[in-house]
Length: 229
Image (cartoon, rainbow, N blue to C red; front, side, top):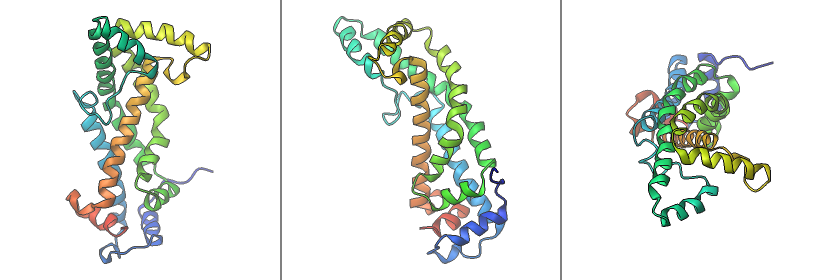
């Protein structure tokens, strides 16, 4: 039987089971406990979408910039030596622009995941490691987000000739066992890397909240997560 959706009272109960070292975390109201946990999740989700779903969100960020698939690296180097580096640059730019265009689609699904949080979800988030909330998002949203992202990525890259040529060659290579399946289709590769970038960015925000909730400027985050440190 699936876990029931988490109530405010149940969140407080879970908080009471976690060792609290800060006195201000004691006596949290149901409303505060519920608001604090959800605020942390929403902050991470909104931050990732805002940072990545804009021009140069991926292309200008070395942490999440999507490189050419490994199978294309040698060909790219050859093309550059032949004076066709512009084609390579156009493809890599299109890949990252595609990820930037698709990212806003993540917002609603991430927020929906928060609304359907269960008792077990909250327990893992509260007592897990620095990226427990990020793992929660990935488990709940990666598959549906991949479905939403793929058509957007496809439209953004299909105009680049090199993308189609890569798919033709890579598809045959994968069928022969010469290429990893996840690199056989450029659009799926970009979609997967875009999602990796989103979860990486959510994870960075989560670590900030857990390690220094005071720096968030949010009193409710300070009360809830300050007591868990």
